[in-house]
Length: 201
Image (cartoon, rainbow, N blue to C red; front, side, top):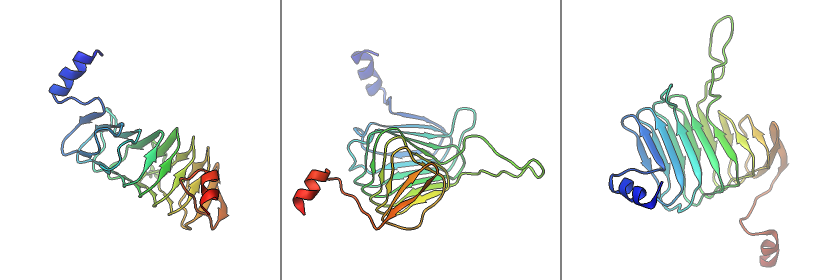
């Protein structure tokens, strides 16, 4: 697309980062954040704290053949990202990311299994997705997947290439592996490089 067409689209109110199909949807974010939001459904909310100037992320709520209603995605202040995909494909599901979280690249937050798993006798749905919650000051390593119905407490680190399939309750832990488990307790982390951290001690 040429620069002139982009200017025409801006003048017409189009935005390549927002694709919203439905009613009552609300999106709040900094226009320069590089966050892309694609919504199929009604009454969904995406809040990326407006103080976050750069947050490469794609948020999918619903799909064209299965719209989703009443979902909420929240990212609080101080968070940074090198690339996240967030998916909510079930009604009333919620993704909450606390303050000062740091995301590496190629991270998936999946508040759904996308397709149904059910009991063959009762037909009961066995894999409903409801939430993903990250506390404050959580560092997520590259190539990590965080699956539905999981909680990561404050001040934790999720190791590179981890698969988070359950909730954790203890703060200040290193969590890693596939499936992820607590590997070390009583830790914390800093945005400083190791050399910088050593110099300030």
